[in-house]
Length: 116
Image 1 (cartoon, helix red, strand yellow):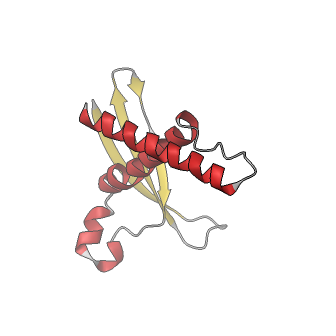
Image 2 (image 1 turned 135 degrees about the vertical axis):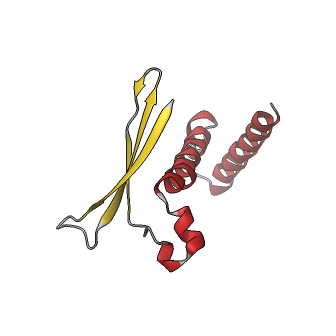
Image 3 (image 1 turned 90 degrees about the vertical axis):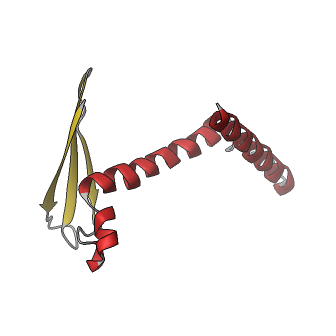
């Protein structure tokens, strides 16, 4: 497996300022896996060297955007698998109880998955 990160700057007439496009080219045994993200986070990290290291192409993709996708998957798990979106009763207390049960089930599942 090999991967490469590339950056280019785009300036669209509809955007208020230019954006960085970060591309990740990855070659897997099953084939190519290109990924692209568009960000307005500055490359220089607002002049702070610590922030600049966080905003480099590879670090920004792996640490920030992949973590965001992982969090969205956890939210989707709770909504779909643990029925957190089932608040269809007419009483707020029963809807709140359903959400408490769903949150507790999610905590229990996360704890069990973490211990395996």
